[in-house]
Length: 98
Image (cartoon, rainbow, N blue to C red; front, side):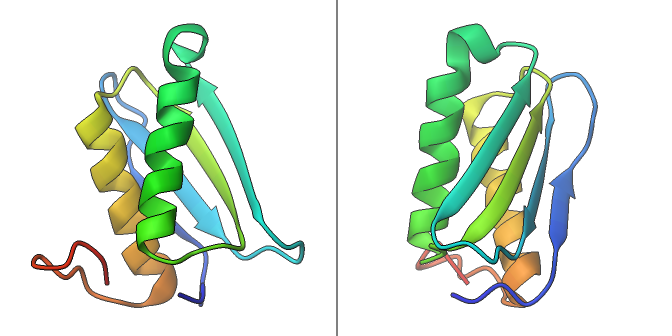
């Protein structure tokens, strides 16, 4: 899917994450992670965000994750919301993407 606008989802509260997605001039994904638990879970966070982007067929974007020890399902849902907002789509509950 094509990113139409920059979008953010989530909050900077303990146990939550803020995910920001914007357009990129460069091909590919640029994912940066700032996390209080990056040493332990950075790879898992990267995998989760990557899976969601792949499910939305987003292959060119800048993504910033500001994690405050959120559980995997929180990171997944925040990324899904940011993707829907960025592409202008609505979440498809049956199919899992916009």
